[in-house]
Length: 373
Image 1 (spheres, one colour):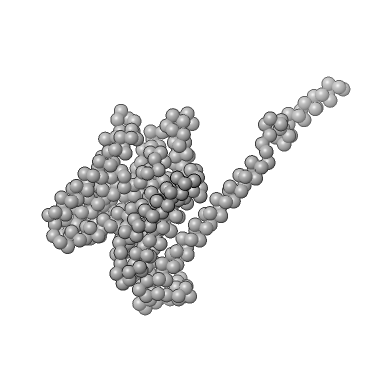
Image 2: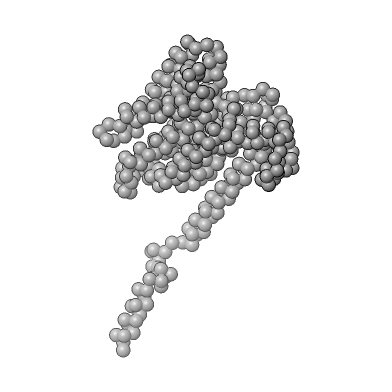
């Protein structure tokens, strides 16, 4: 009888549910840890909701302001009329749906793509100063578009983004081939080769500009400053699916980017297929940046400033950092584009000028705050 009771007590003490509910004192986690995790998740959700709301508000504000301003009620009425099939051929509808709305859509995806590209490159190189343009992406795209302008009579203007996209990919592929030795991707070599390619492309662009006519010269210079003006449905159909799919694929590499923060040896110990994933991170970053540059020109600081700012809110967890950077990049670029076309209206500034001024100021502020803290 005593043997049966002791056996029953032993079975009760080793029941999984009981053991989990009443662990030994040395293995018990304090309840405050669970409360902290819950608060962290709640904070993440709240920040994402704020970013989404900010993106919606900035987009609505961009629709409203300009040389011709509209009230929110007027904007809402035009959208409802369009939703229920009522055709509105007025000048107001043309301004909203054919001029401003395409710019906003393109600004969201271009800003988001540049920001996510910056996150990928900074995580891959473990260097917070790396951005898409450091690696020759913008230089290759600018050289491709310059060649497109030079051959302007032979090809339609609609093919200029393809010239830029091809130039970016050629530059990136060349950098990858040089930096990849004995089947291993040498990250420091890749950074150095990218910088050198940027210098070479800049020199070739200056060479081309020295032999073109004045109108082509102005077109190339304006394009290199970055602009969302002249956006049409063709550019949107090209950029939106590529950048959205590239961003979604980047989320699948978030764990690898988190592991790379421990160094390559630490990532190897965690079972990461590092060489394969480094290649994918590099080419996805190049795809996002190359697509953005090919449709909007060279827009600086988005891939540098936005990841830094978002890290202050989310830390270094790339599972949250990537989607949050996409939203924040869209907010930043739509806001800058709105300022570019309204500050000196009816004259319009290149959006790259505004991102450079705002981005540089924000970056200096973050550096001074970090050094003083």
